[in-house]
Length: 203
Image 1: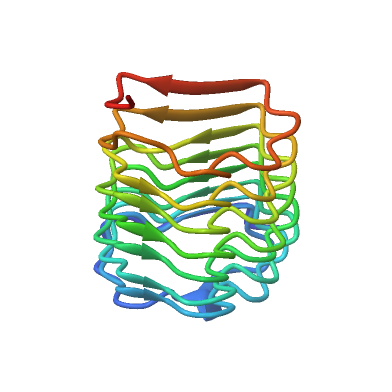
Image 2 (image 1 turned 30 degrees about the vertical axis):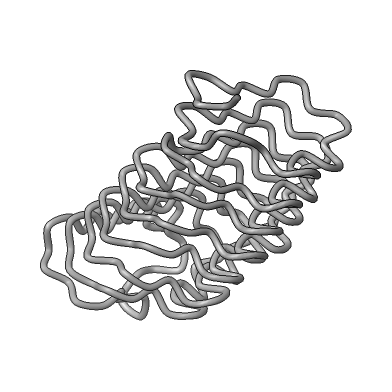
């Protein structure tokens, strides 16, 4: 009999026990454990995985290509962690994912090419993070993203920060703490449907 769901919540795990997880699993929940690092190819071999929940862990580092080799993954949730940086290539190569939930962390910055090769994601949620800056090419290659919801309190948006978001449906920026936008902030957003700039200090 194939095992489709594995729940190991509040188990005190200090590392991801990928060798002990059946390769047939489709829903894996490892919430409220104690692993600080997600290594490259951390879930290698779990090719049937569709939903992965890592909320409430002690995650402070996500290595490049941490989720490589998960061709069926649709939903990924990493919330309520001390993660401060979404590093270059951290979420690279998630070809078929629909939703990436990164709310309620300590994220200050998203580095360029963090989502490289993750073209088909529908929603990225970054609310309730202390992010103050969006770097150039932070969301590069998210060509088909439908909803990008950013945290409040942004103080700097670099030119070309949204380069590559060719067909974004909703781009939400609220409560920004900056008095002006730099030239080319929204360059190449040729097909954006809704751009929300709410309750901000823009002059």
